[in-house]
Amino acid sequence: MINNHDVPVLNRTLDELHASVHSANMISVFDITFPLSNYTFSYKLIKEMDYWDTCTDTIADDYHTILKSIWKTQGKARSIPIFTPFNQVNLATGKGYCSDMNAKFWQAERHATGVIDVAYGFNMIEKNPFEWRSFLSAIITFDTYLPAATLPWAMISLVYQGLILSQYEKESAEVISFFYVNIFINYIGFATFFIYLFYFLIKKEASEVLYNKQESWWRIVEVMLLLAINTFLVNIPCLTIGSFSVLFANKEFDRSDKVLDKKPALDSTA
Image (cartoon, rainbow, N blue to C red; front, side):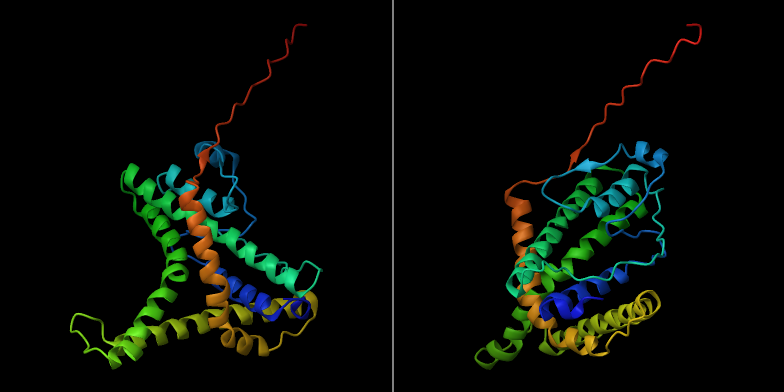
């Protein structure tokens, strides 16, 4: 990011991780990719999918609109990424360290309210005939939120079970062996590292070409060192707050019906 040194270290490492996850969304063999902020449709497709849905409490219209277009066209709609120069800037308020941290936390919470699309996907699975691309889009949406929302808790529980509880209680044959848990945790760690490395190399090249700026290799070390801190101080709290706010406020996308009044044609004989 071009303003790395203008924001708190936790903010910039969280932005790096967030961006690296989305970089994995750039290519799909099934043409199911979800945009960030910017996207475009043909007017024919917009009419066919009955325009945009609305929900004042979530900002995920970009993600949701792609999901809806796939369902409303029985899996025919395809999303194709357009690779363009992008704005590499961290969130900064210009009002100091604490203000930046506060703004970043609540931005992450707003992103977390996109979990509403998990319920939307399952609702469409229940109400519509099976179509494999539509079904896959719902599963991808579920997978987007499942790891971040559940894996940290599962890992805490399993580590406690394997390293602490097992010292006082005899290990049950019905419980997953910590040996396999350790393999899984290491796999997640390596996967996260290589996803981020892939993103970093792309970002480094973009920074040099677009801004004539050298990205420091220290970013990789920084992100890995602060991964756990970001997980427990930002990701888990934000996803928990966002999920419960969606659940207890009964938030949902409403279909936005459009009334398009056609003007009467001019009388050519007048």
